[in-house]
Length: 268
Ligand code: NAD
Image (cartoon, rainbow, N blue to C red):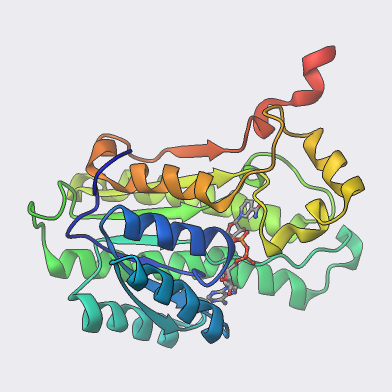
């Protein structure tokens, strides 16, 4: 996509201090949006993301806050209002993994993953929709009243042994997204998701950090390379822009073909 398809728009990205969120922050700024960079306890990293955007002539600001805490969410959205006058796009991206074999998952680990990956996404989306309504439609910004984009995962579809809490949360995000999309489309609020495959970030360093792990991972990716945050950012910018105005309730898989049951390529 060329030009500035998100000129005049304001995006709030949760968990934007690293990995996919940081890549999306840069991509959305490049596309012309003002970017509110949320982080949780990563002030240094978030400041660097903001600084890089500003150095390239973009607009950005940061706001600390835990997406699983309602009071923090209000403060994050208030920061977007204070800096940019409002929010047109929410990217509910913050996520964690608390991996363990099924019988070893503690209640604390179960709740931590569900709290951030599902409840945090729900709380941010709810606040975004309330604010979209208060702001009203502004055709000089977008054809839609507002857009919500979830960072889901291929594991909203692919079962994942050793990660029951994470997979359950992302499966929940899928139905949250689709139900919101159905309920809110008549108000011209577009709700969609991106399902990344294996993207090279800190969340999955164990999967690509050694040559042996990398070889094992590449066997799962028909396209033959590990994804980068920019792969996700490019797709997200399109999905949030008016070029995707008729895309409602969709999950866009950005996974190099990981979800294509690659074991069936040579048999089955
Ligand atoms: P990451 O660890 O680099 O980034 C996660 C971000 O979420 C960080 O900025 C972190 O500070 C933030 N965060 C964590 N807890 C938070 C909280 N309570 N409140 C606010 N922010 C919080 O990992 P990533 O790979 O960039 O992950 C981003 C999203 O992408 C997650 O939802 C993850 O599930 C999803 N995802 C990643 C991959 C992958 O291969 N990397 C694949 C599929 C889905």
